[in-house]
Amino acid sequence: MNTIAVITKEELLKYWLGHRNLTKRVIEKFPEDKLFTFSLANMRTFGEMANELIAIAVPGLTGIVNQTVEAYGEKNSYNTKVEILAIWDQHTEELKQLWAQLQEEDFHKTFNLFGQYEFPIIDNILYFIDNEIHHRGQGYVYLRALGIEPPFFWER
Image 1: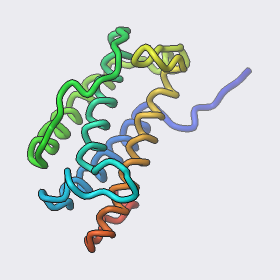
Image 2: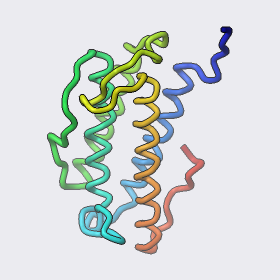
Image 3: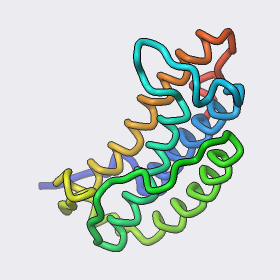
């Protein structure tokens, strides 16, 4: 079977980093006093969602690169916008370093992410991106409910 790559490894990283940049801008828009207190319809605060995103992307990618399976857990909980933004930037740099270690030919190998999700590596990576987009969408709703214009979603 002949296959044609629709997107390169480098293009996928650029796409992911664009989403990370946009999510960072959403975090920046949140008033400090609302990041961990405001929610709608019994959903978590955006600060809690940001902590989840921090606990998934780089720890998950680290497991994939090192072929180590560790249970998911929000080991560190960041309680201020400054802390979240600092770890976000640190993780973005770590993500780039980890990405360089991935081999494209391994994307279709199965990996048991967090000891719970036995899927091809590419599916796990797409999950990291999809989960971030999902929670950022919730952040957009929160910002609008607070009367704050969120960043344009296409400006990644």
